Image (tube, rainbow, N blue to C red; front, side):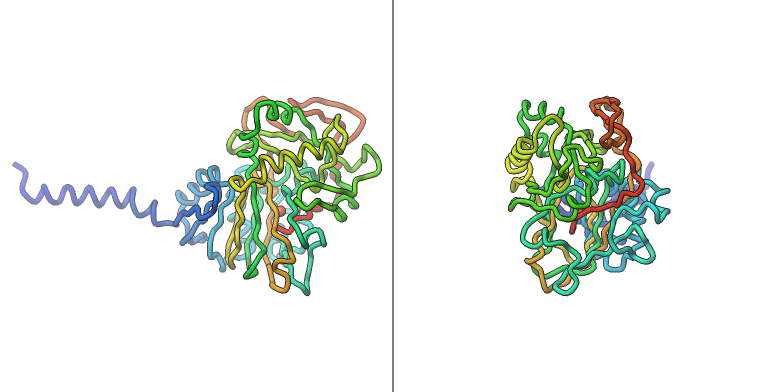
Length: 373
Ligand SMILES: [Fe+2]
């Protein structure tokens, strides 16, 4: 016959086991918040990134990053540049480790951290402005390195680490390209699926670009040659490696026209899509940076811009920046997946829905990205 003590000890023992295995370890490791206007930006608080356990890190890099393509780790003031690179590399399972160990493959064109060349330092105030006038009064929407001739696979993951944020302004605004694509009517989806973008890579286009007031519509300059050797062709729509959903793969500051369309018609159509489906209040989030914030985001699923430099002039805005080298564009098995790179040339080849003209020449090409973050 069971003793009275067994009725007490048994449930207490089971409660202890349950709370130890399933309870505090999982829910007290960090605090997850979605404090922004959209559910796809996550803030992670109370996390010690140097001592986070394996299960929690895997939950953040796999499940959380799949649902929230922007993750902001709050108050990470002690993180060094090498630690930052190590952390960010965990968010792309296909990141190019060989490239990250080589100084020859640094994707950013800016001043590097001495102990981590792949980590750039960016800063802007009235005395030390390292940004062009394009960033002064309006937004500059872009995806990092998309349309670049220098890299076959633009970085999947980008990251910021804010060492100092201005009291006013200096936000980064993100728009979600998967949600925008999902909201297109079927006839627009069918049309955009067939389009190929011609992107410019000549230095005059990259350094002297002018945008309309919307920060999206490119006004020029455009290369005089109709088919410049510095152009590349990329499909407008791709299927995302993480979600399997389609989205644009587009950056306005390099875009010239669609193959088979004239430039005016190309821009009228893209500007219509931008104002109707992409840059909508329900599809954008403006993130105010605080000292110590680390933001890791999926560059292939979003388009982003900083707010105008004039709004925070006179105040320091200093941050580390990473474009994480990626090996793959897409690792899934979908037949319309995209691989490879294209530059203008004479020969033709077909890769899925992707028409290649010649081979990309990557030597002697300077990596340029105009992004202020
Ligand atoms: Fe950027």
